[in-house]
Image (tube, rainbow, N blue to C red; front, side, top):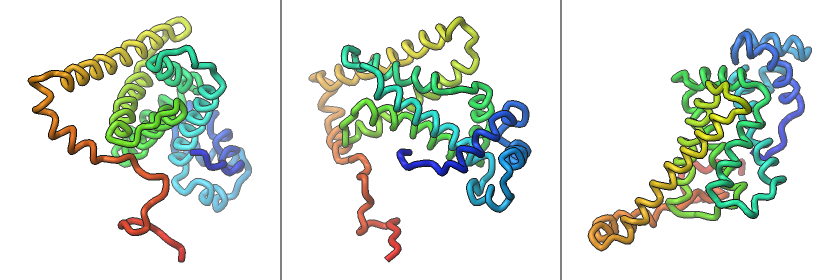
Length: 230
């Protein structure tokens, strides 16, 4: 996500936006954007092999970039961590400049053939939030934090899409409730771990989970799936 984006792809994204509200993230909207951007079909396909789907992915990723910039620019030093997460979710929603584009994107990524892309994007947003907030976990918590936040963020987006309250006040309240729900789960986990009755029962599972580690920044060349040009 930190890799620079080809300016031509960004130009094509700008070109498709006026058409998405009417035609969705479809081939019709993509063809119109190609014409507006005065690109050849060959160049357009080089930039976006899957057409509008690739632009929908890029649109989401650009929102993540804007969110990360907003988090870095804000002074969060006096906030509780739960409030930092709530701020990050609000910053991600505030990064959206076209609500209908998100609505259309939600429909697109709900389709079976694009569901994996949608899940990856939601996970990417959760990962971006935790990384930008300075999460240093490298064990099973790395996964559980992102999985939990993915569910929270997805539910907040769906609520926000239907929210017509003044200045999104209903969505703000919903975000706070969802994070409170997560904090209750953490409280229950802490009580289980401190319980003389339950702790011995969950101990073996905890030891097994402690062997799970976060993915490394670089792939191990000795493991399957590594690609090398040499």
